[in-house]
Length: 165
Image 1 (cartoon, helix red, strand yellow):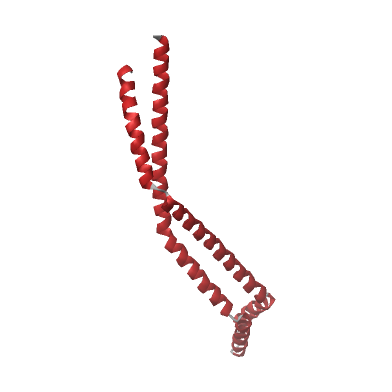
Image 2 (cartoon, rainbow, N blue to C red):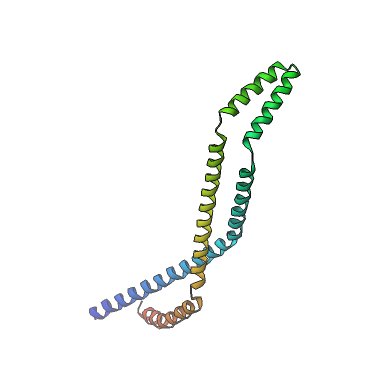
């Protein structure tokens, strides 16, 4: 009798462990499906950000930094002629600082930063697409059939275990 009770205990334990594992799998599958849906929602926004970064890169490339320094110098001379000593001193200081800036290197650094950002966003977009594709590959119908089959196996075992529990 003791051996039979011991055997029944292990069968009950095995049944409950199987049910627990099944529950965890179902919860994880639902969570993964919801996560994929959220990824798809943001996929278009990532594309828009990449497009906007392309526009910014083109605009920065089109700027003529040396011409801007020349314009600032011209304004400085015009203010000098108008006898605005304080404004002239401030503009001369700004112009001197602008002359010291390596505009070519700065432009290159900005372009490099934008290129790195575009690359990172492209990689993120690719990862999002791969995750969405892998979720599409999930055979939900086969999973549902497996759950139904498992249910038909577990229900009689649970009923049997309930008679002795």
